[in-house]
Length: 361
Ligand SMILES: [Zn+2]
Image 1 (tube, helix red, strand yellow):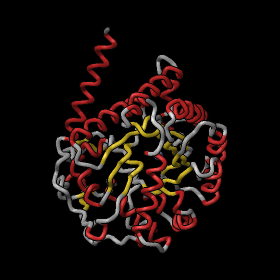
Image 2 (image 1 turned 180 degrees about the vertical axis):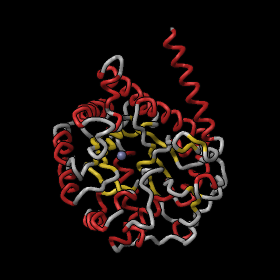
Image 3 (image 1 turned 30 degrees about the vertical axis):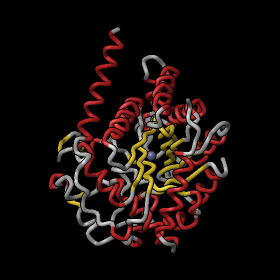
Image 4 (image 1 turned 90 degrees about the vertical axis):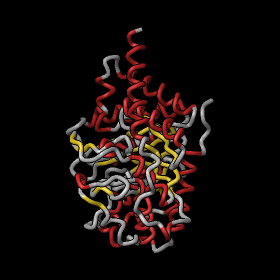
């Protein structure tokens, strides 16, 4: 009884949060000019809309009001039709489902969807669950099943391995947690949103491919998101389940000349677009920046977070889903193809991966 009351209180709190977030949802469309992008449509397959930066909080300090509504309005203005909200803990996934359902009542677009899973840097959550790792899997499964029923949850993840940030969670714990997500994906028949980082001191690709290839049976499709590996890494993950693996491209995939060469070589047919907002933004210093074809006011509009006026400016160094357009332009520039083609092919790829699967009844 007490547990039930606590859980109801938690749900009520989450719903209040969601309502607050969407109170600005009808905000005026904001200042990213999209005149030559009107015909394009995008699916941002990974945006961390649960991040505090969209609530106006930076490292625990308030810099401005919650401006989620204005952020979504800007995304809508450039043609972002759907955003998959990346969730990286059990609690975040529960809040993510609430956020998605709340957004449906507003119905201004873009459509929101969410994932359920545990980010590799938080993989200790399985071990640290007072009821044990199996119970943690069961709790994630309940959120996945509940969310899959009405389409609020469209993927298992993000999950995977992050060997660049072993200070948060050791590799062994990450590997165990990663493997458990395949059980979830099989149980609900959902695609997966995978994270793979580690090209420096601790090379991740061998472990990633080992765990992935041992678990392909019964899997639908997956995206290896925020890809910044080598071409050989890309070929290896694509070969694990040919036709069922896609590469997620965002600003982090377009930073260096080496990144650019890899993205040039990966066929558009296996790519999906994402922003990983508020992270992985495109910076002037990045190799990809030269390929941008945005109206000049697009980026300079960004101001320091404490000077930010929601609905009028963008926050400097805070990435947002509207920049899916910028990712598409850079890919187009690198490959020497029309940005409309990039938008169209990646949209259809994302549609196939996340929105064409059979749902549980
Ligand atoms: Zn990630």
